[in-house]
Length: 112
Image (cartoon, rainbow, N blue to C red):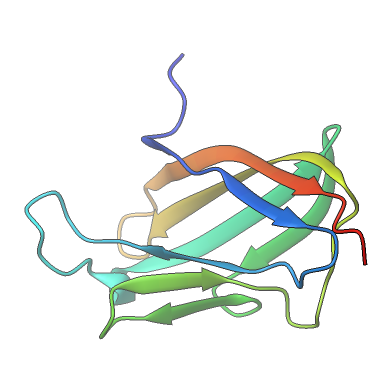
């Protein structure tokens, strides 16, 4: 079975607040239909959930910029290590779910 359509790898240090932004457009470069979908994101370490975000809690869509920002509701720092993460979308009219990306989050020692 194939993985998600895209792989997104994020690197940061343990001295930073965890957050990142992705730009999404359709294959032809046109705007993504943000309002047609619900969004879910999960971050895991050793198969244990560390962070779960949804459209109503921690995922911020900026349709005018074609971006989605993944940021916990409160400042969060991750311990050094390697995490797996992924994002899926669900079409609100049809219920069809697609995993948009998976990949790794690598957190290194920041020395502060």
